Amino acid sequence: MTEILSAPLVVEFPFTRSLGPVQSAFLTGLRERTVFGVRTDDGRVLVPPVEYDPVTANELRSLVRVAPTGTVTTWAWNPAPRRDQPLGTPFAWVLVRLDGADTALLHALDAPGPDAVHTGMRVRIRWAATRTGAIADIACFEPYDGEPGPTEPAPHDEEFTDPVTGITVPARLDYVHTPGRAQSAYLRALEDHRTVGERCPACRKVYVPPRGACPTCGIATAEQVEVGPRGTVTTFCIVNIKAAHTANLDIEVPYVYAHIALDGADLALHGRIAGIPYDQVRMGLRVEPVWAEGARHPDHYRPTGEPDADYDTYKELV
Image (cartoon, rainbow, N blue to C red):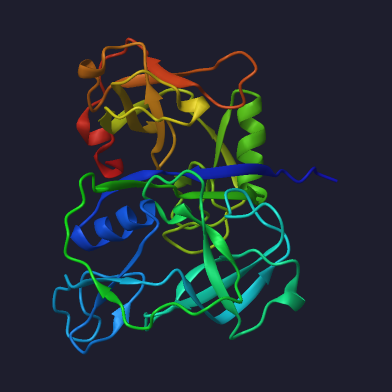
């Protein structure tokens, strides 16, 4: 029986965003242990605040302070916290309507178990010991049986001396990928330094990497065809941003990433171009794969020294 291939994969793209005046005030307030909402045209107080009225679409700027205490409106128990979640022990996700607010804020509630959580329970903010101007400045909520906070929000119109103007937002997806029959054959061939595609029985095009079906005709493919190893650069881009946090892409910039039409293939695959100055890479450049020792796929492609391919030979793959 053929071994089923599987591998853990991570898609990660932290990005930096700038903040408008309302979001800036909200996060700066959290850093100072203060929660701000924004008052809408009809007098409601929204927490977290938004920059435009959800009913009228008018711009909102009227910031108000609300209490750090509130009421749970709904909840769900999380028995197995994941990486980077607010608490490392089981906790409840809760929507909390803070005293003085008309909407609820989503965060974690530190509770001993699901039996200790109920809709309507009173809670308060537990502030993080170190605060930087982020939602994590609220470490979590905790049960609270003290006096309720003021129901009338206090206006806020003073300026911050050091406002938060931008944040880095992590975006990451961890998953296990199991390729199908066609991709498994493709990956096993790469281990032998070969590249295989599959030919459509109708249009006769060879697709690399194979997909198990022709994307044009929509019918299954099974005939394997070995292509390459040489190919032609059809188009490319110059990468000027270093891929931080990714060990296998720790490549000095600038470098070139290209679409490469391997000889015999009717679909271009992508690969890095090296062995030539980045500003000398061009459409039509003939290249071949370079394999690192023990690698399961080409590390990069380099020029073969052949004359450039004529545009008519690859124009359909641009």
